[in-house]
Image (cartoon, rainbow, N blue to C red; front, side):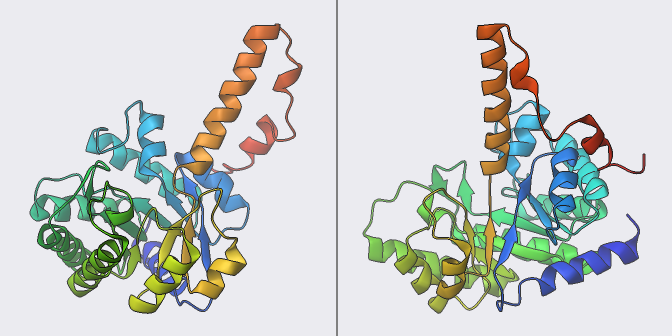
Length: 278
């Protein structure tokens, strides 16, 4: 991707977070799914770290080699032809310096935005100062690269086990969000938060675009917009749906010996059209 195209994508992606409309951002897991989602008219796509890891043959949680993840990002940005935001987990590095290096690599691969999370494999929270330093390092890397990527800070207080009260969890979420915004984040992603009253409170108390993850019991997009939610991502849901459909079709084939379950209204020719250029 040439620099002018990437700059245009970064600016377009940033403009999609003006909070006047709720951005519906689907998550791809490989180049093919990214091209498919872009073809449906979504103005941008994101990636799912879980889906990307599975497509590479690894579990989620920064288990896939970074070089493999980076190569996948490069393929996705090439195939999508729209702005791409990547789920960058915690930055694939032990230190903020390493995170900055990896962010520069991802920018070189064509991204328009990224998520950085403060949870450690869904089990514990990273110290807030350490998490903020990683965001600051990512912002500095973006400034050095002269690409204004949108940094979405994921707050995992509603993802990891919590020992305190609901009120304490809310206050910790707001405290972390404020620290990350001060460090250079553009948006906040309290993954796992889905209760409408909670989302309304978070939107009121956090002065930044708020991202929520889609669950099957989440209020619809119109209701989320009324609550003040700026962005909704599908996380691993589309990837797991695709894997579930393939698993179920293969299981029926194995059990029955019949091939009728392989018929689809979206086939080889349709997929070929998603990739007009080699």
